[in-house]
Length: 123
Image 1: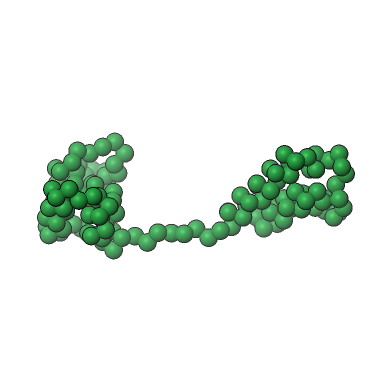
Image 2: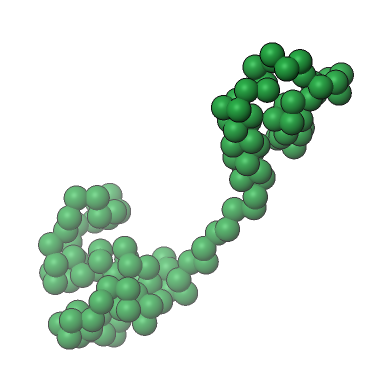
């Protein structure tokens, strides 16, 4: 079933209307109970979110490129000067994770659990 059709059915049910016949639901129908109506509207909103286009962030300009000696020097100098990771990443056109991983490789910081390093590559 298409999400659009499912959302329409949920919306009609939330309004207390039988989705097939178009008739009002009886007063004693569970679809006329306030908690059920709220739940149906919540589901309808969630289905709308499923249809929303996903916003994809653009990769930094140097993502995936090899690090040059000049970049390593600039990174080390910025780190030694106390610059924030985010600022270093922005200036080098890299992600924060890439900057952090490079600092590990340069011996400036210790690796931490969860820091994604490529298999086979050790700092």
